[in-house]
Image 1 (cartoon, rainbow, N blue to C red):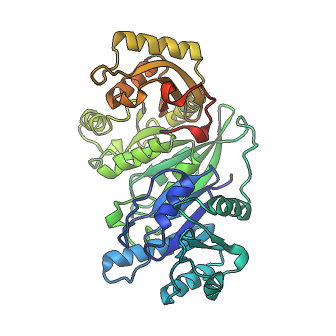
Image 2: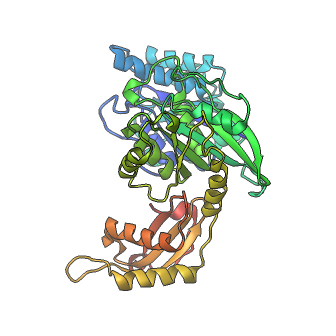
Image 3: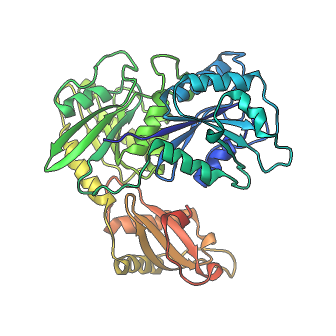
Length: 448
């Protein structure tokens, strides 16, 4: 039951932390700007399937409550992390703030790496200036988020320190991991206890009782299922110090670690934009998803109205099964196990290339893609390149002109034959005319 490794990226404002995260993740995730203090919340990315990198807000004096909450996020990240990256601007002399950050990081007793960022600039200072922080030279790395200088060395050092090894376990032997995700007091711990058939977590009506990821393994139909109960999430502006400490970071880590996420929605309260945001994070991470409607025993007028609203608010999840439950009465709780097995099978589905291309030809014949004057996208063929989640690459010409609505149309056509229950599916589009000969696709070479 290996947990997701977490690396916290801390440092003063404008040290290049967001750019460094984008470079390490090979995509634009964090907002990057020249203005100091741009990053106002934690941003994360899974790096090389090895660890979760958390980019915290830049360190600033807590001049008001908002800035104090940013400071608390940094402290939380340091507390929850397995390794800490302290980023500094290598072109600037150290000040007392840098020394205070380093002192806090070293005090945590976690491994601390010093990242001398912006090293591509000619104004970089000698490394002796940074020895004042008390971090060993062997744990000091020069990087450039702009050019990529030193980034691979940094990642390799992190993996070695965290002892992250390639996954060699048999897929049939590893447990299916289900994470319970949702707002505070939505009923995650009650459902966790009901599924585990014993009091593994503390059940309380007070919001935010669960502060860590509780785990239990069960056997169902000769399959091991590991259930992860996470702390609830409030909206970023309403996250409080103390009782909700670390919840955002642990929830992100749980989503990344899980194979399938059960998104719990309280049937007695209108579902919020946060529910939709959590659903989006789950889908973006490529995880299976079940929408679990909780506390339905408290509804006086049945579930029809709430189901209609759920369908409207989550129209981007037509493939996600909805389970109406009550942990109090036990209604439909055990059905979640069968859904887990069904979704896991969908995530591992491999479709024959000939079947995929039959679907593509029929879709194009029925509804050809639109384009510009005298220029139209021409999808030629489709192949599946990956599973968990299933990933498809469509080859053709002028693929950059393929409208987003047509992409959704093609996904619907595939799902009509292969439903992929509870499973997001990913697509990439390859322009044969500009890229030349066909080439073998790997996970690293795909573009979203």
